[in-house]
Image 1 (tube, rainbow, N blue to C red):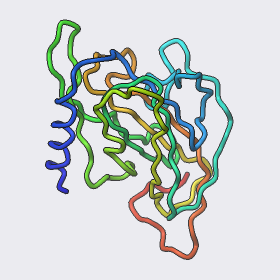
Image 2 (image 1 turned 45 degrees about the vertical axis):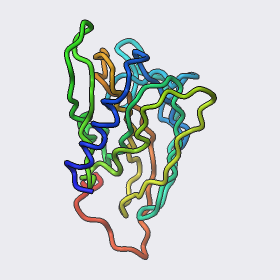
Image 3 (image 1 turned 120 degrees about the vertical axis):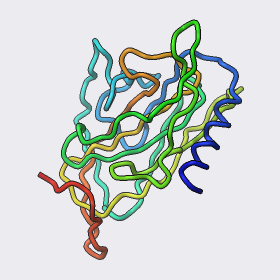
Image 4 (image 1 turned 120 degrees about the horizontal axis):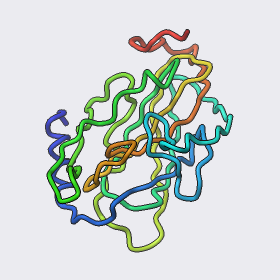
Length: 206
């Protein structure tokens, strides 16, 4: 599906949503988050990797291990419902290499700008690994199972890459910080698969 068609599909799904909760939350279950999360996944407002204006989080000091050129299992739990979708990106040397939050379309409201939809990269462009994951617009009525997916890693090596998972939320007022997006990251040590060619286009490890 072309970029424009994918964007319009997400736009149509999210426009059908009746405004509900004023915020959303999620927990990064796998791989392990780089900061300690509470039962709702906080602190997660600030980009690129979570925290808030007053709490930047306590490091877990966990560095997961993965093999380049293979799939990485992603598992997250949405703890407070909000319509939207998720995006996954990878930084080789520093979180500063991570992309800006998704470009968002808004509408006016008595609470200021409200998010309507966000651009989904199709196909994803470096450093984005996957976009438009877990598009949803129906409020759950019972216990919610975690979202799970296998995300393709590039065949590269890095001692401490930063894997970022962001949640775009529709029908959402502007957060300070974070805008219309919540953020989690995990630190990974990736070893390239020697049986496969290295993927080009990624920054060299410093």
